[in-house]
Amino acid sequence: MIHMKHLFLVLSFFTTATFAQDSALVKQVGEDIKLLPVLWQQQSAEYRALCYQAFNLATLRLEKIKTSGKANNYAIITDIDETILDNSYYEAQRIKDHTEFDMQTWKQWTYKASATPVPGAVEFLQKAKQKGITIFYVSNRDTSEVKSTILNLKKFQLPDADANHLLFYSNKSSKEERRQIISKKYNVVMLLGDNLNDFTQLFEKKSSNDRKTETDNVKNEWGNKFIVLPNATYGEWENALYDYERKLTPEQRDKKLKDKLTGIE
Image (cartoon, rainbow, N blue to C red; front, side, top):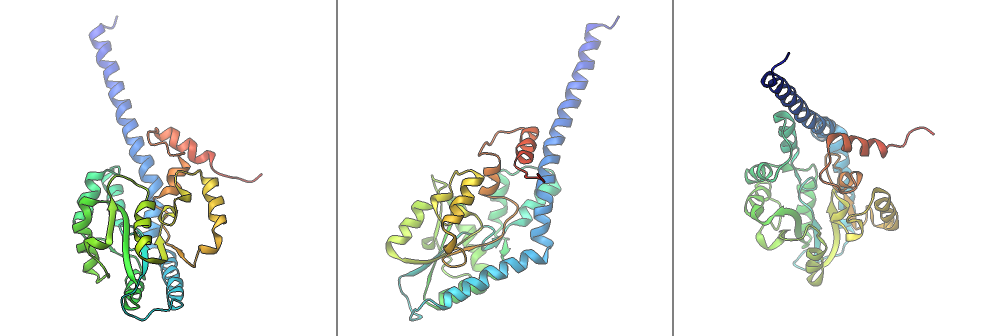
């Protein structure tokens, strides 16, 4: 007969082993989801081509804007992460270290001011500034990241890299209020972003299908006033796939993703 103490030890061993396996599964799922998108951003020539294409198109639109080349009331609103600065290094290190995203490690990364420019971003924004257009950086980085972000932007001679032109997250993730503040004083001629929430609040907290519908509703703006940069690693599109549910098990995430697939009928 097995002594109860021995039985307890055996059960404890299997419970611990199962917990370890589950933890490993969580990390494995997270890594598998992000691995190819991060490699695509860092290694594919196609990613660079899409970035250059976006900024080349933005430059063509810029050339049609009549300015005196001096200070005027025209402005461009741009997002920062994966629009102007490439943070794929942070995502890559998470995969290497088998860790999940958290705000502490993210801020440790941004405090380094080591992000590099998205291909074509520096040249475009410098041309815009030469035309007398003011640049505003509207980002959901925390206000505690302003100083390090300014250092990062200045490292590459990006224009208007100062606290007056950086509108960061304080208590609302929606950027609409910050865009409206700028619009009251400036004629916003262009918006740049990798997330559709960077352009208008119409896309906020919408399902994937509703986001597509809203995209169609403003189809004439894409490539004109709205310039989109590629980001397959993260964004509102991913949150929509999970129906904006944040506390999901790996199995629940996997099911939601597979349920969204459309196969051969």
